[in-house]
Length: 139
Image (cartoon, rainbow, N blue to C red; front, side):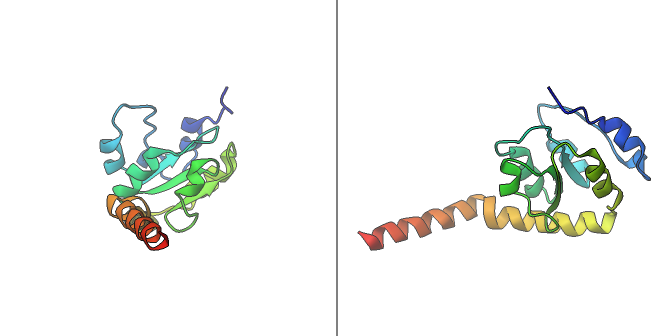
């Protein structure tokens, strides 16, 4: 059972609510991420990892998410996104009300850098090579 955050009502209270679309669950989110300034993941229970976060970061979109589960391994609060306490609609509203387009651009650039440094194929290759080199030198 969810915690009952009424997202459409929350959005209606925003200063620029015409700029916000509540999409819901979709099979392919890529077009929606590309059209957005931010990705919001207001999960009411901890996400084990949240692949959609990496999809947003890869597309240069910052994330606003509940601060639980695997989200904490992806989003750095205030750098490439914002975190709010799980189930706390007023804190989510505070974050949403503080945003502007300049922040979207800056945090989006940071999100893309985070993706490249931590989650891209190149990042995994570098870490694998480091591990392999460590194993070989210890043998």
